[in-house]
Every structure is written in C-alpha cells, then in structure tokens.
Image 1 (spheres, one colour):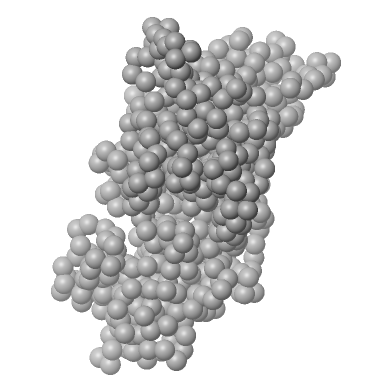
Image 2 (cartoon, chains in turn cyan, blue):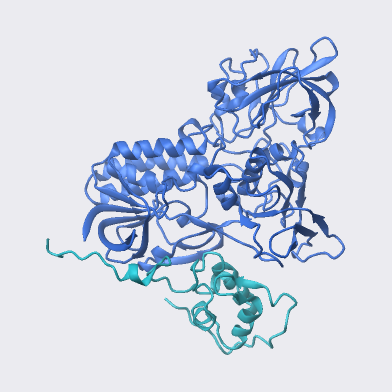
Length: 111
Length: 524
C-alpha cells in the first residue's frame, strides 16, 4: 500500500532553525534538527526516519511523538501530513519485556 | 488457543456497548483492556453529560460507566483487565499479554474500540515535568484524588480543555488562563461561560511561547499569534504556574487495525489515521469492526451508539439475529446517532464559522472570544425573559443536542420542541414553582432562577454551585458577573442540595435588584 515517493523533488538546502535543539521524541531523545536533517539526508518516509533515528521506537512507541515527527517531515518535504504514509504497525503493539514475549502459552492446537 | 465468538479490544464506552449488544443476543464475548479498571475515560468524567434522556443526558460520566458495567455483567460479557493486546492478525487471531505470559485467542469477529491518545504541541520547555496532558490531569484528580498542581495554565479551548479546567477549579487548583491559538473558543459556550464567571481569563489567538524552569515548570510565557499562527513579538505575557495542561486534540489509536490489514486513510476530519469503515463500523476485512474514537474522534455518547451498532452487526454476521432484526436495531441507533450529530458543533460543521443560530439569532461574539455572553447580547435569546416573581433565565445560546431542561420542569415552563438542538424557550404563561429541577438538570449550568424584584430593593438569583466548601446560609460575599468580575455584595439566602439534583447544589443569593440580570456567580 506504499504510495510512490518522488525522490527527484528538490526540497532545497537544510537551513538551521533556532528551535532545532528541541526534543521531539522524548523516549529516544531525538531533536527537531536531527529529524529535519534526516529528511535532507534522504529519509523521506516515516519508516526510513524511524530506522535512521529510532523516533517512536522507545517506551511510548510513538504515542506522543508520531504525529509531531510526521508534521516536521511533511513540512520539510512541503507536503501535507495526510500524504505521508505512516509507519508500519506491527506486533508487539505495546512495549513488552523479551522474557514475557517469549513466554507463550503452550497448548495443544487440536484439543 | 481459546476461541470466542466476539473479541472486543477496549473496555471503554464503545467497546462495552458493543460487547453488551453482542452478548445479549447470545454470543460468547470477551473484552480485553490494558488498564486495571474498565470504563475507558468514562470514570474520569465527573460532569453531567449533554444529550437527550436516551443518551444518558444529565447523568455524570462515571455513573454512565457504572451502568454500562452492570449491563455488561448482566449480559454475560467477560471483561479481562490488565490484558494488553499486542497483536491482531487478519485471520482474527489476537495476541494478549496477561501478567508475565502471552496468550493467543481466536475470534470469529473482532471489534476494535481502542479509543484515542492525546496530542501534544511543542514549545521550548515542553518536556519539563509539569507539562501534562489534560487527560493526565483528569486521571490524577478524578481517579487518584491528587491535585495536578497549584497554578495551572490550560492550552486548548475545546470541550476537553474547558471541562478539565472546570474540574481543576473544583479540585482546588487555580486556573490562571485558558489559551488557544484559534481565534475563537472551540468547545461549548456554556462550558466556557462556567469558567468565565469564576474569573478564568481566556486568551484566544495566543499560544505558549515558552515554559520556564530548570527541573520543573515554574512559569509560562504566552504570546499572541497572527492569522498564520506565527508569534507576534512584543505581545508576550508571563504567568507564574507550576503546571501546563495540554488539551490540543486526540489521535485515534488505530495501529491494531492497520496491522490486521484493514484499509486505512489519513483523514484530518476524523483526527488522523482511521480505518475505512462502512456506516456501521465494518472495516475492509470482513468480521473486523471499529467503533468509537478509533474510527474518528467524537465523544462518549456517540461512541456508545457506534459500539452498539457494531455489536448488532456482529450478531447478524454470526447468525444470532436475522437481517430484519439487525436493520430494525440499526435504524433506531442511526436515528439516535444522527440526533447527536446535530447543531453547530456537529462533525459536519467542523471548521465552519457559524454566525447565527438555527433560529436566526446572532451568536454571541463575546462568548466566542471572551468566554461569556456580554450583557447587551444576553437579552436576544429566547431563554432570557423578564417576569414578576421567580422565573428561570436560561443562558443557553448555541444549538447543541441537549434537552433535559424541557423534561425537568414539572410545570412546563421550558420548551425545546422536537428538534433537540433548539434553544430552550421560557414559556410566558406557565408559573415557576422554584423547585430548581431545571437548574440542576442543565449539564451546561446555564439555568438560573431569578426574582428580579423582591419588593425591598433586592433580587434573588439561584445559581448551580458545584464547589466545596458549600457557603453557609447568611454568609456575605460577592455577586460575580458573567466575566467573573465582582459586581456587588451578595448574601447567601439558601443552599439546596437534594438527591434529585445529583450533587449540583442550588445556591440562592440576594443581590441589589439592579444586578438581577448580571450577577451569575457567588464568591465569598
């Protein structure tokens, strides 16, 4: 379902802004400047940003920053937030310790 | 792997309603919720709800929650708490964390009612302790009995911002200002008026420029914004606060639906990423439904109806009711839902500037900009009349779907008519018996009983009063205007609090008669 991303578009140079040091993703401590710079480094989708910077990958799983990150990336690309494909949703949907995730209930499927 | 006919995710208003409708038709239903208590946001809502009698109007939110739980219990719904759904797959397998183990469940149908999460806005200092969501403030106050702070600034003038601000006042916090970047108040005027008359100032076209403090919030600077929402230099205002509350909208928590392969869309009108659903909540994956805020941000009353719709659809899908029965139930629910989606705050009117009521009366400009109806504006509304003797004065000036006042009056003094959004009209020929039922029934606290001339140069004004401590009879204080300004001396004549008022105390104060139509709050 990914929409085609036109990467030939000229988004101009990275121009520093006074609030570039503002924290956006609190869990992973990523700043606005880092997100904006990542777009200029070629990360044009939320999935790429997430893999590049780990935004939304911390304890809150993007509950707080997903929308903020999306807004910053969209503005940098000069598109609307709705045009930006959101990150993939996959299990586990909530933070969970590995020992719990590995502790599956074992049942006989045919019982 | 355990099997259920219906698995509901989220035990809030819509999830519980869906579960009830399915279970009462004989389906085996389980509801998972990650919280330790069911009810979603309902148990934080200590205010009376709007709507009609059928929509639980004038019942407090937590009571609606209690009633829903009771109904769910009676219908045989299994509610599993501390049960975090961590995965949902297209074949309707649900993976749930319970304690230290992960369990797999299979549902014949799935209803996702996971609700929404609060939005945040950023400004320098927004990560300081003391900057919290309005929902968090509500949880602290109304579930845990903890004051979020002493002095609070609220950002956001939608209904959440207005309602939570009032609750902060009730909890004994000082609300120093209500700020919104929009040029007019977003929520119900009656909610704003409730705050204004206690003296809370509104700053529209303003936003937070900076939160001050090293380890926690010690102050905040707000700043006026232009039509492009850019800060206007030189308009800064500083407030000494320890808490900044944000009520800047909600985003659907729709990740489970996306994960299961339901077609999604980014719809700003619905609050963000939402599943593409039909009229009754079915997604693109047959047998997976969505109900409540997860499919578009609205409020609890409509979420409950959406939940019921999904529950009925599921019952038919699995063969527990006929097509005709389903259509009959859905037709009725649809009518209820439509009646809630009327008036100037209807989803269809979002973003539109409405200048006149459905009756053709101009909307109060002061109400939208300052949070209170100006004295020269109030007389144009049909609930504001002058009579000799005690009579109701209804300062309800916007078309909202709400009509309990009409049924509250045993003498028929108040009429709204068939259309639930009509402004209430005070009938001329019927005589008020001063019972106070209308005052207590108004969820917007917009009804007052006024005796404009007691014959001795004084007037009495009865106001709804939901603060503690309750003033003593005989106490001397001040009558406050709609804007919270001290107008005159006032003496408490009586305080009535009977069970039928449901904790809305009726405080009657005596004021000089020239203030009969302007004194609307009491402060000692």
